[in-house]
Length: 122
Image 1 (cartoon, rainbow, N blue to C red):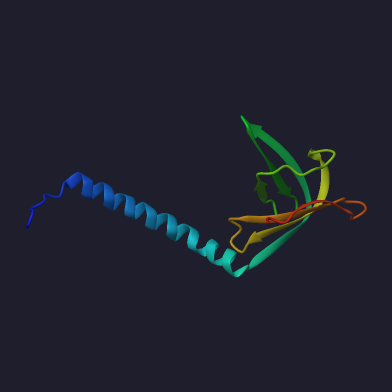
Image 2 (image 1 turned 90 degrees about the horizontal axis):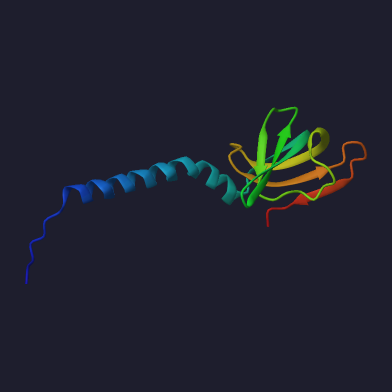
């Protein structure tokens, strides 16, 4: 038995729009995804400060690198005694080549070079 169906115009436009948005998101993330899969990372290191910001129930830490003027954010808060702009540390942050995704960090005491905290991303 053959049933004749009508295709609605707006439903087709919505589906096409969703498909195009999906393609755009895929096109934007493919370079970073390739770096993550092949584990092709850069390590940004140098003097940094760590600022903690919280909104509602979530909080994150922002690493401000002095020598590159870059900022990297992590969802977890490092276990340190003090935070803020006036307290410098030496940080090693592993990021993708295009600097879009942060993988892990290591925080060292600036004077002694002792490892104070790390997050390996696992």
